[in-house]
Image 1: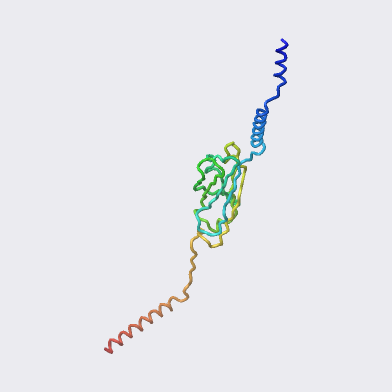
Image 2: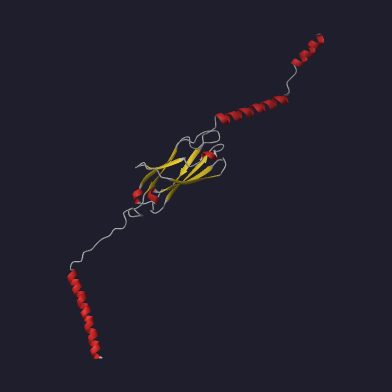
Length: 206
């Protein structure tokens, strides 16, 4: 019995394995770092909208480029035709979407999408002048963790000089009056008579 107690005392008081403790500390540090990156430093996806002003008439559309970024990956399947709305800020009229393409085709960061909207009436002219707003609402585009791109907007201006393009009124026609039609007709008759007389003189001279 005394020998068993001494053996048990030696086992309990034996020093821990330094290599195993170091391995456990490294594993714990890695777990803490991963948890901090997910809980403290994880950011929502972001959208950067780029669109140019329109200063010349005749174009049939406006192109909006949006770059979606995330600290991990943007969910590619969340990018589509319902992402944006483009409106005339004075009238509230929305432009019609013609098409949208996005690359790459799989989830990644960044994802670049190009949206093409038709001009009012089919082409830009001075009657469309004003400020337009491109708006991306919340819960439209997401990252792979389900986080939504926050509401984002961008404005562009249409400033086409008056008279540029088809304004829908057609060409202007200006009419001028003739003061004395009879005198003009008389003058034409006089010229014809002179020609006939000259022809007769040539005939008799021969």
